[in-house]
Length: 136
Image (tube, rainbow, N blue to C red):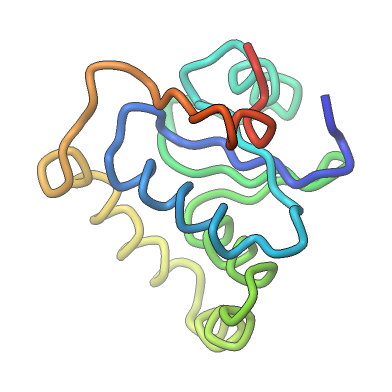
């Protein structure tokens, strides 16, 4: 596993999450990110190693090389800090207290299937994108 890359764990059946992953891939000019689903063996293993309570976190998680990880709005903003053209807005949004940011994040996360739909199975990457996903 590429521990030098930042790992984004995402809900593999969520259409919003799928679009977010596609967005990150498109704007990841330095090839810093790799991806795994929360539902997969690798995602579960990475969460267990860090004692992440999977009953409380069911959306995005960013794992930095080493042991650090971010959840909810902190994960989204940390990802934005590494995407070309999104560093400034991420820095500005960090000025909003995390409790307030996470309230908005939780509203979207709780409604993501209703608003954006849900897939029957996890995302299957195209052959060109396969290297960006950690295999189970």
